[in-house]
Amino acid sequence: MENDVAYELCQLVGRAILPYRRADGLDPDGAGTAFLFQDPAGEYLLTADSVAGGAGELGLRASVTEPVGVAPAALSVAGWVRRPEVGVAILPVAGLHAVAAAAGWAFRLQPVVDIVAADADVVARIDATPGSAFVLAHGLPEGGDRPLEVAIERVSRVGDEVRIGAGLPAGYVGAPVFGVDAAADGGMALHCLGLVLPGTESHPVATFDRIRAMLPATGEA
Image (cartoon, rainbow, N blue to C red; front, top):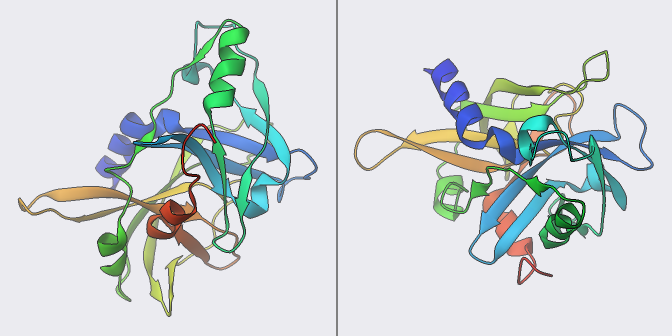
């Protein structure tokens, strides 16, 4: 079942997830993953504050832009709203859409939508019993290319934190973490629990109930 969930996630939100490299960062610590989140107020790029820095480059693989061959391989981004108290950085993307339009191309993305993002009740149900977690990220393999990858791990509550119980490869910090929960109809409900924060043998997760509280008042901010 876990492999089926991983496949479905790639189909549903694979184009929400982009490689990011901090402008002043060296590999591996300067490389991470960002993803697009959409709520009724607007669209935002999210990543870990430790990865974002003041500015950086967002990788643009061919499947996330149109028409084919017009967009650059990477787009410079700046202006992150940094929330170190939660560990996240937020970038409203209205300005990026404008840059793309002026250059004759457009984003072709699949945002993680608000209904999928875990609310406080979903987060509260995470307990000390490890459950399946799916991390969609752009790792940092040798050779320079950063394809989309899926890591199937375990997530649980450790004290006051939600944590992934294993170390993750370089490039995964900032990536979205998904979990599954029992739905009211007896099926399974998919939730984006939050994003990966730095760690070594395990990683804390900045959960979406806390991320929502950090979002700017409008996606145009």
